[in-house]
Image 1: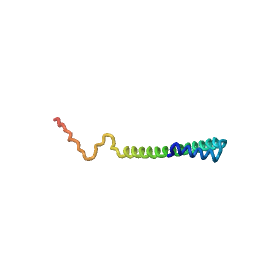
Image 2 (image 1 turned 135 degrees about the vertical axis):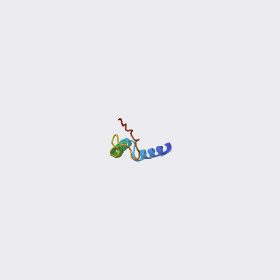
Image 3 (image 1 turned 60 degrees about the vertical axis):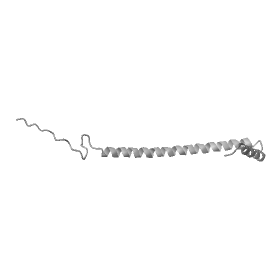
Image 4 (image 1 turned 90 degrees about the vertical axis):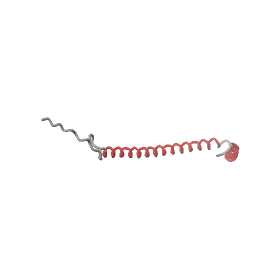
Length: 92
């Protein structure tokens, strides 16, 4: 970035070019411009983050829906397993 002597030289040249009366106006307008730029970039980044969040939430809900659809019914036996034969009592 700029060191302290660099900033001092830039401010000195600006003071010589614009004069002491115009320098506060230039500083104020520069500050307003930077503030509005920062505000615009913050709003843009917030909307971008919101879009990303909606995208992630949409994917998660689709995943949950697919998991629900592919889950076996309650009480259903998983494939590939066998139950033990039940004893049948024959009372005579």
